[in-house]
Length: 418
Ligand code: ZN
Ligand code: ZN
Image 1 (tube, helix red, strand yellow):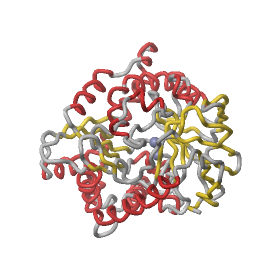
Image 2 (cartoon, protein in one colour; image 1 turned 180 degrees about the vertical axis):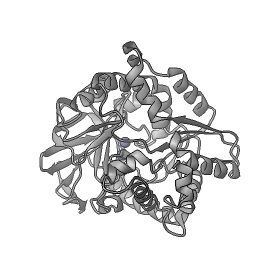
Image 3 (cartoon, protein in one colour; image 1 turned 90 degrees about the vertical axis):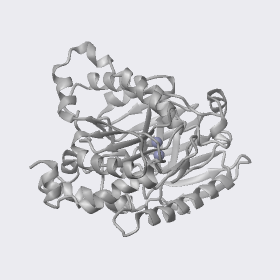
C-alpha cells in the first residue's frame, strides 16, 4: 500500500493532517501575502506537502517550491558512490536557499525520516558527509539562526520512523500511533489549534519574562552524572514560542515547542554532563553521551553508541566543542508525559532540558536584531557550522540560577519549575 492509500484507509487522520498544514502556514510561518515559500520534506510526506501548498496559496503565497529527499537515494549513495564523494555537498543548493531568504522567502522544513537510516553505514563516510553538508549549509543556516526570515519545522509521521518507535505494532498501526502523537504534541488535536497556540505562547512568554527579570550570570545543573555550570552570554535574552523575525513577521519556529532558551557564554562552561535521552543525528543514534567542559570547551567526550560520529561532529570546526544554546523544559511537559521516545530532536528536545553544541541564535540577546557578528562574539555567542541539541534534563535534575553577586535561586527541582 502506498502512503496515500493508507491515508484514504484512515491510518493518518486526514482532517488532523490538514489542520497541521494550516497551523504551519498560519501560526508556524505566519506566511505573508506575496511571500514565497521554500519547503523541504521527505518524499513520503507528499500528502502533507500538498496540503501545505494549498493553505500557502490561499494565504496569498507567491511561489511555493518543494524540495523532496528520499531515503533510498541516500542509501544508494552510501553503497555505491566513490569514496571521494563523501567530502562533497550540494553547495549550490544552499547558496540558492540563502539567495531565496535574502529575497524574503519563508522556510518550512518537514521532518520524518528514519532516525536510524544510516546505522549500518560506514561511520567515517557518515561523519565526513555530515561535515561537508554542515559547512556547505552555512550561508542558509546563518540566515535561519539570525532569524532573517520567518521559518518553521513540523513533522510527518514517517513509516520507518514510526516502526522504530512502535516495533511491536503493524507498520500501519505504528504510523497511525505516531500520527496521533504528532497531532497531540503539535496541539492540532483540539477544535481550535490557533487559539491553543496563542495560550501556549503566552505561558512560554511568562517563563522567559521571569528568567529575563532574574538575569542570571550562570545556571548550575546537578543530577546523576551531571555537575555542570553553564555561564550565560553577556546581555543574553531568554526566548520561547513566538519570535519576531528580522523581516518583521512573528513566527513559531518549532511545532511542537515547549522550551525557553537562551545563549550560553562560549567560554564559561565548566564541569561534566551526561545525556538523558538518545540523540538521533542525521540518521545515526548517539547514546549515553558524557562530556567534560573546561573554559567552555569540551575536552573529553564519550558515547556508548555512535561515538565516532559524535567525535567527527565535535571536530567540524573550532566552535563545535562549545555551546550555542541552553534550553529549559519541565519534566511535566506534555511530550515528556506521553512517555514516548521519538528519536527525533524536534520532539525529544521538547521533553527535556537540553544544550546545543555549536552555533548560537543571535536573536537571544537584548537588541539581538541589531548586533553584528563581532558584537555577538564579544558577548560570548558561539559560532560554528553545527547546531546539535541533546537532552540533559530528567526528573532527577536540579537547576539553580547563579547571580553575578554569587547568590543562588532555585529554578528547577526534580525536573520541574521550582
Ligand atoms: Zn532548543
Ligand atoms: Zn537548538
